[in-house]
Amino acid sequence: MKKGRWIIASVFLAAVLVLTACGGGQKSGSESDGNVLRVGTDAAYPPFEKQEGSGEITGFDIEVIQAIAEAEGLEVRVQHTGWDGLFEAVDSGKVDAGISAITITEERKKKYDFSDPYFEAKQLILVPKDSDVSTLEDLKGKKIGVQSGTTGEIVVQKAFGKTYEGIRGYDDTPGAIDDLVIGRVDAVVADNGVVLDYMKKLPEGKFKTIEDNSFEPESYGIMVKKGNKEVLDKINSGLKKIQEDGTFDKIYKKYFGQES
Image 1 (cartoon, rainbow, N blue to C red):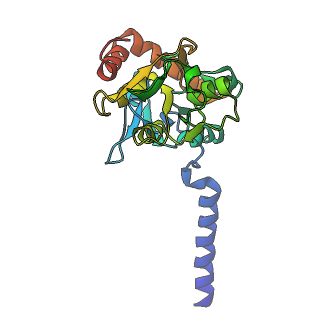
Image 2 (cartoon, rainbow, N blue to C red):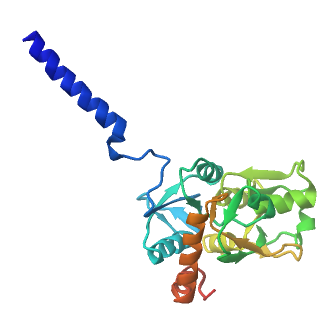
């Protein structure tokens, strides 16, 4: 009996070792299936991306990347990473691409590759209706809400210095606007698409937007790890297809009321 058990155990152990060596045919979490596009986003930036109560991630960017994937015959999986976490996820290979109203900047291009631009944006200043602010310079000495790590923060720092005590950094733009509503900050500087969408939810006639002439147009792009040409080529190919067949314009009109 003991000998028989030993033989059975040896056979079982050998089988386990073979299966372990083969890896059971499974891929590690950081490896990507060629037919699946794993996408990270900061789902707190409506109308570009937001997380519904059900957990589903929706928005303009999400429909764009879904359409791109469909045009290329890919399955897309979108996950909420947060803003800082988005860059970390691309760096580590946990996602293949990031889409989250990401402005293409020379600084970011040093570390990441970007798709062709798909959206043009500009910064806006949001202030109470009775505010005497009419330019960015008028915000000097005031408390300014920005989303940390965004171009809104960059333009404020450029105007008043990185050590300016009036800058209030937030994890997301809605949080900054909420503090504007209750008077914790005097103004918010953020992308026009987000600000104009949020204006629909604010008390009518209580707030106004200001466009400063110093604000330069910005282009959003889909971000991939530096050198990931395979994924970038697929994204650019799909983007071109949906721009040419009218799909992109339909999505744009749904969220912004007009064609791009």
